[in-house]
Length: 245
Length: 347
Image 1 (cartoon, rainbow over the protein chains, first blue to last red):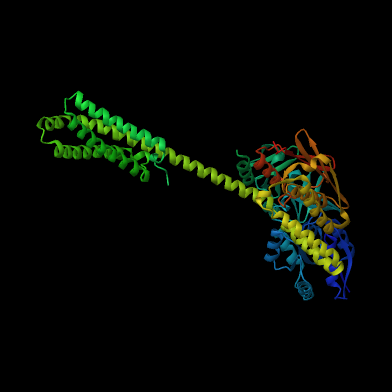
Image 2 (cartoon, rainbow over the protein chains, first blue to last red):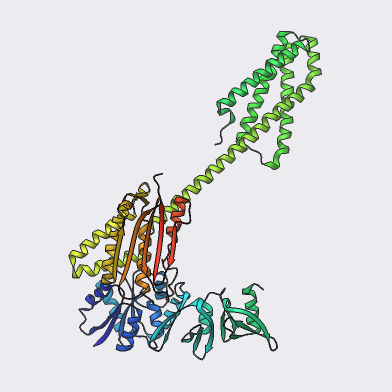
């Protein structure tokens, strides 16, 4: 018996998946979720074999929900219309269903999944990397603290700090870990607002109150919160050009 | 094609009257100041001035097709001089042909050629200058008109596009809902197909019905809300509070739907659980004031660029009423309120 979870904010959209699944006795829907929060919880609880996931959903979208999972299940995306998502799917040859879809098309997707061609972990990671370049997602960072999900608007971020395989996101309310790389953030964040001041630091220039010299050749940026962020020689050049000095 | 100044009656009258004045003055000068006999003076006056008018017409018509740019004015001067020379040569030849037998006159003609040339040059120069000014003015007027037309076209196209903006997301999701209903509740599926068709027809309404009554717009909005309620089920609740006197108010068609769509998205995507969207309409000091309210979570950072835009509504009202203060957005504690004011268009 394979466990399935459907995550879509429209009840009828979930029921059509349910209907199409009726001819597969070996596949059972263990939970239907209304949004990414519920989906995240249900996936952790049931460890499903396959999920049907919509992109545009309340609070956090489908991609953001997947980002939060340590281990992503196989995913078949269902979406009505989303340019960025479709580009991402195509780039990574992941199967997706465009609403409204037929039973035949649905069967094909199930067939692919059974042959393990759908939504392997590696594919999904690459997909998320591509999808996170969409303008909708570069406005905020979704993190989890314990079992809770937190959405951080990028303009609330003070600075980012490299921490092993993670990036530490520093805000007013403390710091949060996100399993992404520094270069990912350097690429996706607005370069007029976020500058990589140092190999291990990306700083929000809105937060900088002044930049002081520090030891030989180096500088340090003083933030409004009083925090000091290291600035390398290279980073100093970048900062100066963005700040127009 | 740019119109010649002679296509205008008033110009034709002035032009021919001036010509007659010149002819009469010419003849009387020749007769009274220079003692030329009336017959010869008349021939001289008519021959010179017919030639003059032909040259003038030549200039006016040539400039109509070939208008020199400001850097080419030297060319014009040269042409004026050449035409004057030609005019002098022609009149000398013709006058000698007709009246050459009178030796006194032939002598007088020879002596007066210089003064004739000066007068001719001045007159031809004047005509040239006036023509250039006229044609430049015409061309400018034409350009201005073209620009105005282009602007109007662009404005109409923009208005049309703003009105027409249908979210593909909405359309495909509705079709998906219908697809689900066909299996479970065929009657409801049929009803929704009907509603969706009526809604789509409404979005395709032609330009001439750009202004409709608020009650009509409301009917259309209800159609839209019905569809959305089928899509989102119990999660979506709406409250309409409409003052009686607002129903007759004229408003631009399809104005409310994007606002409602925005509220629904904001409300449904920004929070979980049940969402109530409230619409209130009142007539207030010569304005129809419509407020659309949706709950929202202040802690949420809504993604931008996914169609959560009231900009199209703002832009449309600006294009229609040339005012940018008709849309107001208020974020209160847990509510997001969009207020639009529609001026009285009956005035």
